[in-house]
Length: 466
Image 1 (tube, rainbow, N blue to C red):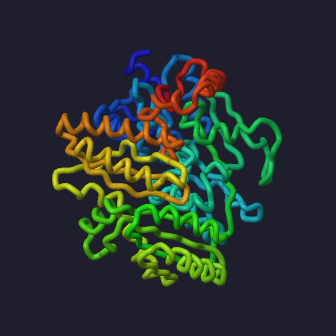
Image 2: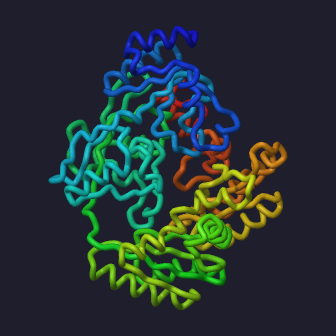
C-alpha cells in the first residue's frame, strides 16, 4: 500500500486523535538516543497511539494483511535504533498507554500497561511498602514496556538482577493480530514452570516477535534503610579486586558503580563543586535492607575496601548520600563537556565483560581512544562487569565521525575477545546486529527460526536484534 493510503486507513480505524501523519510529527519519531539515528534518521509512514489491546489488534491485523512493517516504541530513550522505522511502516507509540491496572499487594505483584513510567510505578508501589527493583538510570522517563522489551537492568542489577526476573506474565499481540497470555491465562502465582517459558522469550525480544500490551510484574518489599560507601583508588586494578574482596567477605551490595580517571575529570570539569578526589578510579557501593544489616555491611565494606583504597567514606545520612552519589548521577551529562565543541555520542556504550577483566577493558578502551584521537569517558556498573563508554566528538566533522565508528567497532570486538558481550543492558537494536553471528554462532540460526514462527512475514521491527 502507498503511504497516503495507509494513513487514511489508520485514521478510519482509530480516529484522527490517535494517528499522527504530519511531516513534523513523523520527524520526531525518526530517531532515538543512538548516534546511528542521529546520522541516519528514518521517518515512519504513520504513528499510532493505541489505548487498548483491541486497538493494537486492529493495527496488527491491518499491517499483516497489507504486508506493512510495525515498530513498537516506548519513550524513545533507547540507544540502539531499536524503536525507529528503518524502512518505513507504522510506529506504535505505547508511551501514552500508562495505566496501572491493578496493584495486587496481597500477592506481591502489579499489572500495568506498557507506557507506565518506571519512577511513577515505584511511587505508587511505595504506598503499599513495595517496589519494582530494577533501576535503569532513566527512571523518570523510561517506560516499563521498554524495560521489558530490552530486558533492562541498570544501577541495582548486582543484587536485584534484570527485568526478566520480575516478569510473571505478558499479554502479547502477535503479528497476525492473535492475542496470547504468557505465564498462564488466569495465573496470579509467583512460581510457575508449566509449559515452555514464552515469557522469558518475549522479554528482551526488542519488539521482533510481537507487541507487549500488558505486563504482570513481581514486586519486592521496600527496604527500610540504605547506605553508600565511596572508595578512592590510586591503582586501577585495585578497584575490581576490591569488588571481589567485598563479595568474598559475604556482602552483596545493591549496587556497585565505577568512575575511572576520565569520568572523574569530566565530573569535576562539569560541576567543580562536587570535587571528586583525583584518582585512577572511584567505587560507589550502595547497600540496602534493614537498619542493623545496612550498618553491619557498610562497616564491613569500609574495612575490606580500606585494604586497597586510599580512602573510604561510609554514609547513611540522606544529604551526604546524595552528595556522594551526585558524581555518578551526572557522569553521562558531564562526558559531553570534556571538549568545548564536543558531543557525547551513544555508540559502543554498553559492553559487558567478566569482572576480572574490567581493568584490562578500561585500559584497552583508553588505548583505543588514543589510537583514534578521540576522548572517551568510562564509567559503569562494575558489580556485574557492565562498562559504559562515552566517546566525545564533533559530529559535524566527517573525519571524526569515521574515526568514532572505527573506535566503536573495535570496542565491540574487544568485548567479545575478552569473553564478554556487545551489550549488557541497552539491547542490540540496529547498531549491534552485525555482531550477532560472532557472538552466538550456530545458535543464531535457531533464533531466526523462532522469529519465523512468530513473524513469518518479517513485519515486526525488521532489521533489529538478529
